[in-house]
Image (cartoon, rainbow, N blue to C red; front, side, top):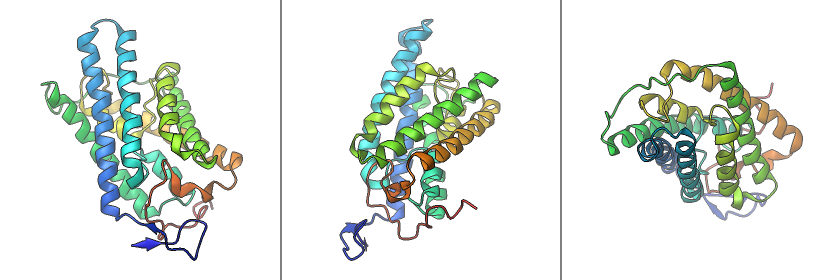
Length: 261
């Protein structure tokens, strides 16, 4: 299936990828990301027991490396959102349709759960084990607002500035920094948050703590959308390139701003 090249209505030069293929990319990408987060957390706890700072550094390094690689690998197929709030924001700016955004989010959550179970299995732990790690306080929720806000501003700002090719590295750098400058260690992703509820390890979060984290992430995303809309009034022109330019089918995408009323 072909659609007109962006900015050139008369040129049918860009091949669209079927939704199923894009959903598979989101499922696999998010799954591998969570496997990296959880697996490296388990490995860090084994390699550096009792040294929380070193454990976090090891967890951060593995997560950043995997995140950059996964965006580069899956970005050309689906854009490598790997995060429901990225998909929601992209929907707001008209980059994808409402139906595609909902499907992306479902694939991301399913992938995140699968990735966490996979990490547990790789380290010979109970495949499914609800986390007992409570993460519940005002400062942590504020940190999630900040972490998510910054992540979306980085993604959409880099794409809109015409430097989408460096987005994987910008996203990785931001997440690596946010692991340390936020008290929550920057979950900044509802799917990843849900995935981390089923592992009782270093990276886990108690299921009862997850809803507040997700609510804070949504608040951060809403604030980021407002900031991006102000800073980049024509963001809709580049929305289809989030996070990486990809041949996703935007023919059915609703016009940017349709949900603003």
